[in-house]
Image (cartoon, rainbow, N blue to C red; front, side, top):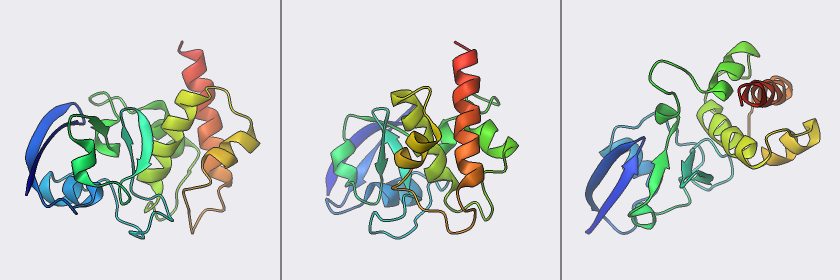
Length: 157
């Protein structure tokens, strides 16, 4: 067992993990952060995307021991209290989901994309989200939601 310590959604968390434990499993099984979904366990779908030190990562491809001393934000920690993040609001407003399974990862990848490129074109949004798969929507409303969030975030600065 290896002892790790990290800030998860603004709360200092620590525990002992097997060195082979994936971040997604530590978040869900040890910390109860079940908003981060397990999709493929092969890093193909992106459903498990979280932010580590502000950058999106597929938590099924990161070992929990690799985040020791770092900050992790999950979909559950994105909102500021009762106030949803602009990307979360836009996904709701634009109906950027159907079954919702990919939505946590899609939202987290979108947040990282907009942090890197606050005013992306449609092509840049599609390219920025290419590692996150949705089997239901056809992506049109997801792209629309990211564009809406970009406009909202730009207007609030």
